[in-house]
Amino acid sequence: MMPSSVDAHDAYKRSDLAAARIMGWRAAEASPSDVMELVWSLDPKRKAAYICTHGASKHRGKEVEGSLWTGGDNDLFMGRGRGKNLKPDFADIIHARCAGCGLVEWGADPANELACARLLQALTESKLFAELAGSVHGDADNHRMRREGYQVILELLQAPLHAPRYCSSVQTGNCLL
Image (cartoon, rainbow, N blue to C red; front, side):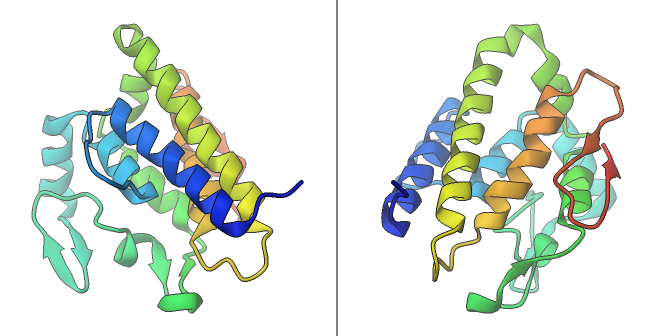
């Protein structure tokens, strides 16, 4: 039986929160962008270098100092409200934001094997809940972010260090990861 929209929303919010807790984030809620911000923040030196090179994220048209990502509005989304959708090249943007921030290296680091496995599980569960909830008519949340954006992160985490990967989730063709 298909879960209701509310049940699915609660379920993947719990899995987002579980992923955030694995990364040491203690708050009442976690969004997909919060989890990705945490993943990208694992290597502060690389994050700082990325921001120096590419600039900070923008939120409502203003740069947010020290942030690779703030809600993702200007980076990944176009439109507003119910008309808000991921940009067609969102996977390329996610990959560019991940590059140089230690994501693949962290995923391949044996010292963090258990945490990586737990994070992979939480992200996979969140992606599954989004796939179930995404088919519920009238659900206005950005499930594509979880269905497709998380897939980019999962593939990056699972990729061997320095090995080229193709992201199978990109709608506009394959992108080399």
